[in-house]
Length: 205
Image 1: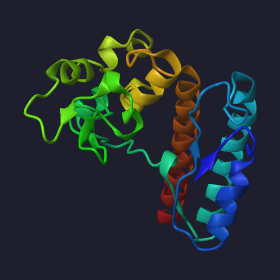
Image 2: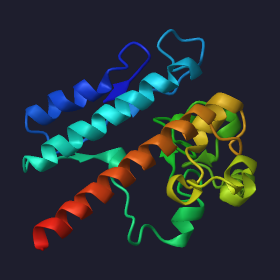
Image 3: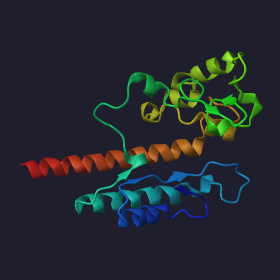
Image 4: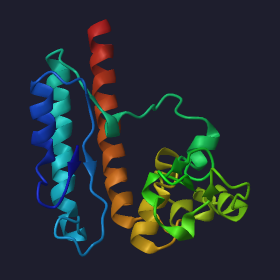
C-alpha cells in the first residue's frame, strides 16, 4: 500500500491487514510533486515518526502473541546484511535493472519511463546510450555528498535514484525527507531486533 498526506495514520492500515491474516505487509510513503495536495511535506515528519513508533509497538504486540507478520521496511539483517556492492549502491536502476515501454523504449527503471532524457535505447535499435549507464553506475554513496558521513548509508545504500531526480533533478542528490524516514525505519527495526533477541535469550535461560 501507499500512505500520503491524506492518510498519515498508516499504522492502523498495517494493523487492519495483520488482523485479517496478512503475513507480508508493506506500506510505502508516496513520492510525488510537492504541488500535489497529497504530497508529503517536511511539516509531516514528526507525525510520520510517531506513526512508525506506533507501528513498532503493533509489530511487537503481534510478535508477543505468536502472530508475527513481516513489515518490509523493518526487515534488515543486522548480523550480516547484503554484500558490499549492494551496500554501496542498492539501487540497480540503469545498471542491473531496466524497464521497457510498450513501444520498446528502454529506461533505467519504471519511474523514468516517458522521460526522454533517460531513454537508454530501443529494443529494435542497435544503439545503446552507454553514457547513462556510466552515470547511474557512478551514483553510489561515495559520490553522493550527503551520504558520505551518514550513519545509515550502508543500510539505505544511497536511496532511490528516481526519487532523487523527482525531487532534486539530480540522481546524486538524495531526497531529504526520504532519507529522514529511512533512518527512522532503521531505528525502529534495530529496536525490534534488540527486543526480540532479548526475549530469545530470556526464554532460553
